[in-house]
Image (cartoon, rainbow, N blue to C red):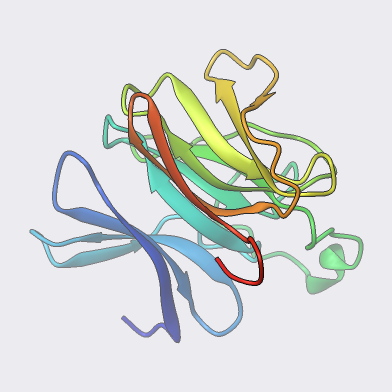
Length: 178
């Protein structure tokens, strides 16, 4: 694969494709590996840091966590001087469609949103955000309505996955351990 690292693999719920974050030594991008065809596609192929990925239940859309800001096209490899004022510390949620490669920005805040995942019916997105200065879980409808906090854990939440319609699984820190 000519990659220095593969991170956060996510199996497509409808076919034999795996999305993952791949590091090529200079940037991290979203890759799709098709097991049946033994092909690898660099989906984002740009200089932005794409750090997490998860599938929509339809198997055609992905949620990605990235620092790309308002850069909503793939393949950007412009002048490195353009990155001088780029905020690499701000992570937001984006949706990308595999068929047309259109990237849609889901969140646009100065806070970090991470571990985004779709509900099993694809109607809602759960994610972790530090809106209060502490990472907690939020749920947002696909209609763009504001997110609603569903946890208020003083020690914060890390790692999240939607298990069933009414069940999320996450880790948190408590009394010196996870």
